[in-house]
Length: 113
Image 1 (cartoon, one colour):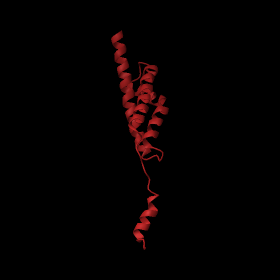
Image 2: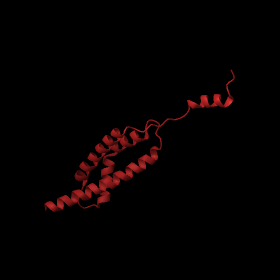
Image 3: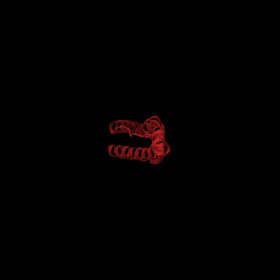
């Protein structure tokens, strides 16, 4: 029995293929919820009511760095597939969310006054 050379090459390279499997959706949702909770809590805690909302939002994102890193790590997987792009998108999303939490908190506080 003679094995075709291309089949032999294919079989030998098959073990080299990187397999990326997306994390379970529930895990990403759970990590996102933890991150969002951190953003909400720190938006209230760090708001000085003088700085613009985006500046406070940036401080909030920095305070929640560990939660963002966990989210990026889960999505990128053990091989770090596209980690820098995922990090950029998570940071952008966190900045937008944190800024919105600051604005929402300020609006709620102005109604109380």
